[in-house]
Image 1 (tube, rainbow, N blue to C red):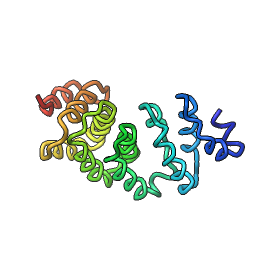
Image 2: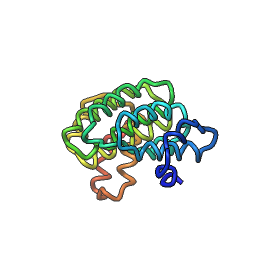
Image 3: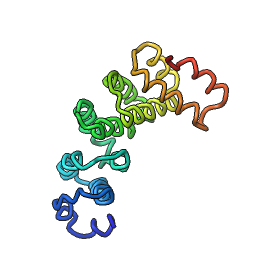
Image 4: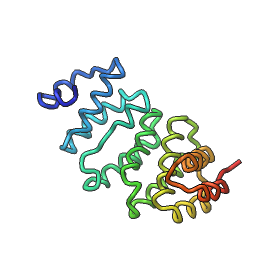
Length: 184
């Protein structure tokens, strides 16, 4: 469906603002995720923020040229962190997910997690825990050092450790070692 809409005048479809069904919202998100022009993408992304109402609407997103425009996306992530809408805060973390493998972005990602110290929303905690888990996977020493020296939201830290322990990317010895980072 998305591919077919993209072959035509897809902005006309987006301008209809059909936001009454899960599927129509998902199609909207998939269309803007296929956009190449950053300004057009941002215009429609701001509308999409009002439509997102579940984790899937957030997690289906892709961003045009994420490494070319990382400063723009980091600014969005900063801005979205304090939004009252749960899925917008989740999106602020999901944006950072695209940069989790690159060492040069690790400090920004880890420091961003500190902004969620008081967040208790399930879907925000899940995304933050997943992001922290991925940072442990790709940058274990630096990430664990950060955890030891900072006061991260207990729920986020515990969720990250849980996700690491459930992962097949860690040996049993590594999983046992990670238990020491759980907070009671």
